[in-house]
Amino acid sequence: LAPLCILPFFLFGGLYQNESTTPVYFYPVKYLSWFRYGFGTLLINEFDGTIINCNTNSSTPCVFTNGNQILAYYHIDTDDMWPNLLANLLMGLGYLLIA
Image (tube, rainbow, N blue to C red):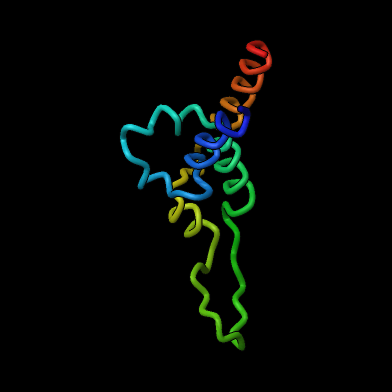
């Protein structure tokens, strides 16, 4: 029963599907997903202001040259880090109280 409850949150958390392509009728699931807030916070923490050094000898092209391009690709605003952390904290406390 637990995987059926968690799977929608996981699918619409931003890792498998870009946030901008989520259909409107799945917005409630998207905004209730704790994965969305955790994933956004993780990306901001890792990539905000990061410079990516590409290996010029590699046959693989360098898609992103800095971390802000990655955040733009996932449609994540760097100002959302603290609201995301607060949302995760409140959701965690809320789910703990419900349990």
